[in-house]
Image (spheres, rainbow, N blue to C red):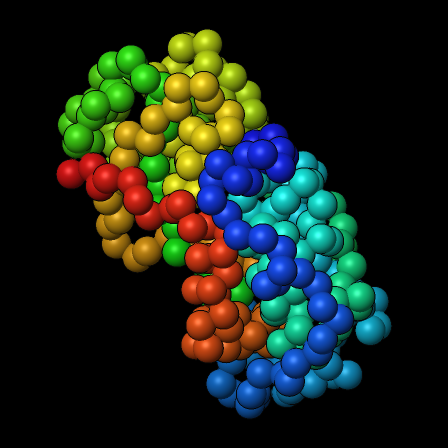
Length: 299
């Protein structure tokens, strides 16, 4: 989940859409329907939120919806390392949620927060964070999550000619040296699902992991599928998507991160749910993540 910003040419390679359909428009929309007992957020404290009227929201800064993400902000989730431009799936989703809550695009303020600081049990300087953070029971002990806005599939990336390039099953990956970014569900996928015979390589960022793949010091890298497509299209000269890891148990999802006990959690969840119900999330996924989903499944 950590890549270099995507060059304009690479956007074309990925077949992603243009800004036209989801660029900030300064158009506000109605708030989601809200009742005090119907919230779907994850915080017991937030369940007491009486209303999601914009004027009643407990914001960091009155009248401003403060959204955080990391720097750099990676493709295809963002574009040009500029979250405020509305390009990329997560930027577009953030603006869509803000609009649902009654904010115009110019009332959205972006701030920077590192991945590790976001999931730490510390006070937050933002209302929400969006940064490919998977919802997990362990993380819920430290922070709140909205309902999921994206269903995640993990994938294995390699290069042509590697010993796993033609792998069709998890068993065929057993002897591979795999790597992932530290603290991610991608790393958990290696240890809990693939279970290779050798210890996985751990990297502080995906940039370093990709470099290790280029140097052939690892055989494969595990990342979420859209990031895998980006790596093979724009980061590697001979990249290969080996395949998707079969899902097991509760599907993995990305969710907005909020401070533990935030009074906004229910309202953000209801906005996400409304965008899923009216098809907006599917449209944005098609626009920005269109190449995802075409990788073979590993049996």
